[in-house]
Image (spheres, one colour):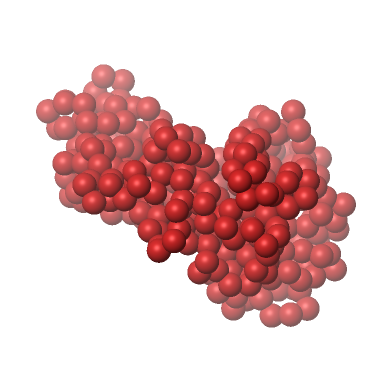
Length: 364
């Protein structure tokens, strides 16, 4: 298994470690509920160094990105981030990604840890048509960069103590190249928890310096280590998709409710554009929805979703007991005629049908 530059600190702090995307990662420290509420109420730090970073550079960079991503990259400006996905040519999604515009000819793609190699091969294959060469205009820097996500309502007060310039009022989905704790860094405001905060990218060799400074800055604010378990419950409460569960190579962005990142701009001939235009116009047979359990229980990945009478209409893609709401919540694909908010459905749990209701996302 791979390790991050912070792995030794996690082990020293008593983390329950497990393999995730080929890395030895912390799943929890003090417990998922405790860590979850810490992020909602104060601040926590996640090691997300397993995420991938791929550079796309040169005069054809925008042309390539307009081809391989569903969102309209031409709308970006220097210092702006965009959420997007890469269609796979078969109506599914290679990955959901973040696109950072450094300048007109320099972009950074942040991709999911489990998909780094798949994404890299896809980008390189598509880059050939634009004369873009791996190792030159295309560069996979995933093994050279570490990343900490500092999340929660107090997160930016902590990070501000490590920065010489003001960062607390940075706008959502923007970033800056700047010094953080004296390290050359990219500081971005995106987040996967819905609790506020930022991500800090530095070179691996600066990881120890960043880690030490962060804990010194965070001590007075009750900063805690947070594992991937709470990262999952936090994102689910906000209705954020997880690749491999809620979206994958078989799900289209239109089915997944990601029409808002699927832009049919003039001249943007992205992969699968024709198919997705038809889906948007003609509709789809299934849709990703959020639901709350009315009966007591916890929905889990791949549990069946049914009508109240027991007719199968789909399946759960993500589910948990919400630490904030204290009820079972989940996401899943259902037949389109059952996707309207307020529709009563059921979750099959060990042979029992538990009452549930389709609701608008987010849950909190």
